[in-house]
Image 1 (cartoon, helix red, strand yellow):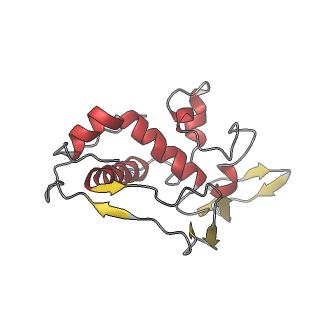
Image 2 (cartoon, one colour):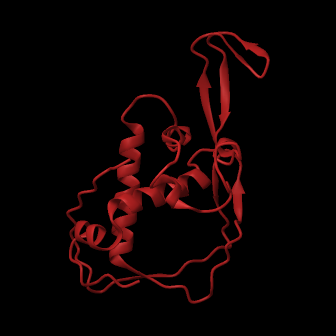
Length: 174
């Protein structure tokens, strides 16, 4: 992919990707590969889960990795399909996606903007090519954090025409 004719990342996004699709790709990527597969939480009020009574203030661990692959929520849960975030038949489905945790705070929107900006800058200033083919099988390692295998190799080359300063404005859309 060569994008040297665009001088600003914003222009590239609007003319080439569109921020709506870029955000869908980011959401789907983070659905399949959450930043932290396990989220610590504390029960705010007594509740019942799976027939068990959970008292207030009980610490819990939420398995986000498994939630994002729940076949009752996500059709073809192992397939990379950003389209599922473009138009959702169930408006509540997007709320079931815990990209940056849950609850009201600036985190989810800010996290998405930061990731979108980083992706846009990388796509803009590097030439990406695939000389050796793509292995679509996942090779993940880790425990609490999940990361790609050290044996995976990627080759990127800085685009010679890319400017050294960037003025980026990413518009966040749901």
